[in-house]
Image (cartoon, rainbow, N blue to C red; front, top):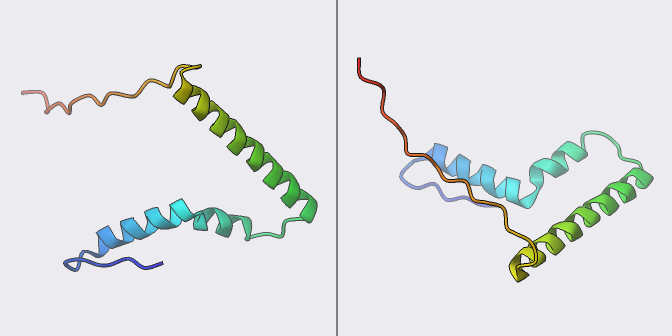
Length: 85
């Protein structure tokens, strides 16, 4: 994985790198590899993950087709300034 550093802005490059690693699942995999996972536990975990993915895809498809309501979007409130003294 490669991230370009622009204008010597290391903080921004690190932020981009972390986001890419998160998206790729690197952190999740590192956490799983800290300890040995029995093959039976691995199969059960992967099965549960597949069920979750399937349910999510089904829910998204139903929302797209209008069969169920989509979750309401959060509206960000405008930032208020400090109260006058």
